[in-house]
Length: 102
Image 1 (tube, rainbow, N blue to C red):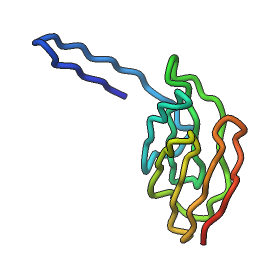
Image 2: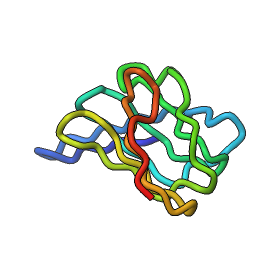
Image 3: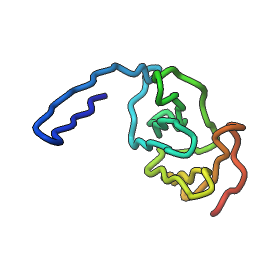
Image 4: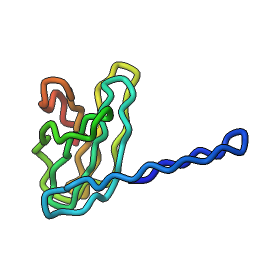
């Protein structure tokens, strides 16, 4: 992961390798309300990382096909869409799906 800042002619770059447990990320979300980085992966899971230190914090399971998109709501809940034709609403803190839209 890289971050760049060119404001006021100052430049810094941060690099950190995130272990995605043998899978690749199809989409990423920086969830500001919960300070989490979410990775929607091709192994059908959403991996959760802490944004302060990028430590792995857990996994959201429930989709039956590749995850296409992640979106954070004002409430802090997260929506995910998948090729399984569902949209799921997740409570990131409790690590559970609370609503499934078909």
